Image (tube, rainbow, N blue to C red; front, side):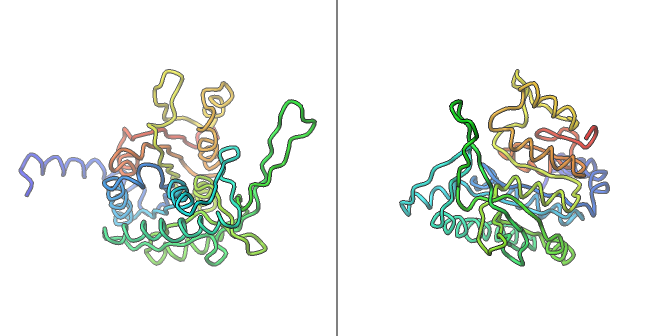
Length: 299
């Protein structure tokens, strides 16, 4: 039982959250779930509770998950060689079978079960269900100084989003379910494609015109050259940070996904530290937040 002081603290927190609950009730929030948040047991439980809490106060959370480390572990156990080009896993037919087993089976069902055990009503799906995510093969080019034209590299069953059937998600949310999406798409020929989870989350947020896109990461957020977390950024300011080299390397794809979403009509994108317990609730229901906020202002 809580003592009086602890009870007052809880009541104060709930009271401060009320304006945010009123503001976002009925709105859609797309969350890309990955990194430490989906491997640490305590963080997994706090994430599941966050999602259930959001649903209970009237927000429609939609979860898109990754699973790169789990895929890598199974490939290693099966002694299937794996390598990367431009940060993307080369995915032949054997590797794609493993990707489908891990993302569409093991990881997806674990997340669904975890949310359900914490009082939610989650349903898992991949882009192959009802042709929910149509994909096209991703072409990767690589140039070297001695080439007249860039080399086109075939990285197998790696795709990008061609289209998304919005009605599939709307059907689930109208039924009070929480969709949990594995980032596997289907091509026109019926072939399966492995798609980057950040990109799928961004496109889902765009087609639904979501209130927020939240990308969970293993860093504190977007940092400047002095290591300070940047937040409250407009799309125009982010463009400037890319142009001057502040945003570079591995952060570019994630920032690009967030930037694309806000320019396409999503009200805000958040790159937050998934290593912080209840990071999602802290970002939505407090002024301080736990990462980088990018808004449509100046988009």
